[in-house]
Image (cartoon, rainbow, N blue to C red):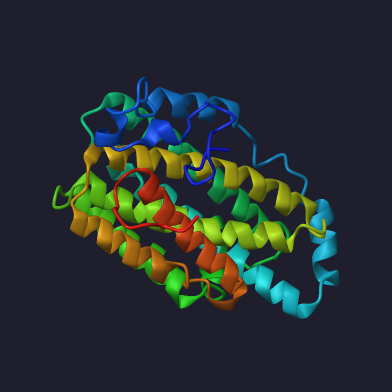
Length: 286
């Protein structure tokens, strides 16, 4: 699935060339930006239903896992339970911040993805983790006590504050995308998803892993779409520098539940995306 740091997308065919900076794009015959319609094609092929994934084997297998492993998984899954609801809520101002109706439509499609993710992680909270609460809001409240402070600060303080500034017109769209798509999705979510997929590679929680695989594919096109918009908007160098600094810090938000080599690799990927897009001039290691 598309990630500019991985090469061509097997779904829509977008490659690094589709995300070139304007100066580089003019030098290559036929190279162009990935159009928003590419992402609509991706969305059409990635539809999945979070309500039909069977979590029964996971619920039965959960109590049998070692305590340390359950604590590690609880931190990650509770974090996504809280964070996915936050991103689904605070994506709304993005569509209103662009004059391009097709871009606004893709933001709408992304928000629909985020709502689906929130539903899936709430199912995990209720059926596997068995967090207390009769409603999704009550279960999120129970989940918060299990989420690292760094994750809560990003999704419950920085994200709402940025969304409010964007809705009020006090910041530009590129500032919102830098935080939402590049830092929160491109670093925090990517690190947590990688940790979950690696942790569950042994089939201990097959339904959870199946759902996280779907979420991971969705998030990859979200990141690509965000990068595409940054290329069009050509943010100021100061914003890009701030983005890189935030990405490095955000990689640490999960703490030790995400292995250090994973955190470091995800932070490098963020820097590499920006370099591929021509938004940074620094040499970035592959």
